[in-house]
Length: 148
Image (cartoon, rainbow, N blue to C red; front, top):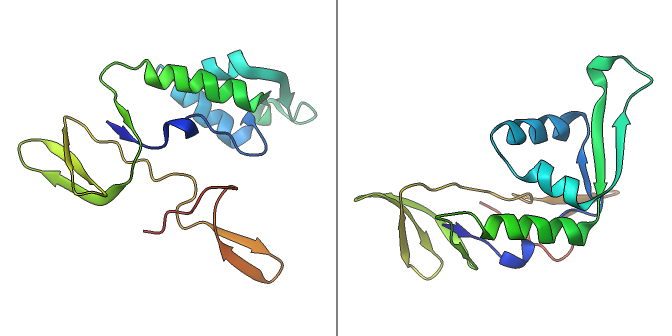
């Protein structure tokens, strides 16, 4: 069971890139586990490059720029097609319970029981934006930080 805004599945930042030295490694690890990120990138990619070609092969890294709308649509299709996964809109309190199984409690106090729970803290966990000497709590435009 996944509790998140179904309209935000696959939402990319203002720089819709997949790959690079750090993120590219994560994409390869997800791909090795049968993940869908690389497949959605192939579907939505508009530019594919190999970075750092002027340096040694140890730092070469593929990167793709994606169409943000196409990527979000591709990931939404893939997530919603997963067996035994139900996507709900809501917030889960920081409350796991273990009794006759595992579960979570939502913002309305409803208990959801599951055989497995995956905690995805989100990108903007305790997000802090810096603009000169000013510091503002926030996340991507239209998203609030999760302050735990």
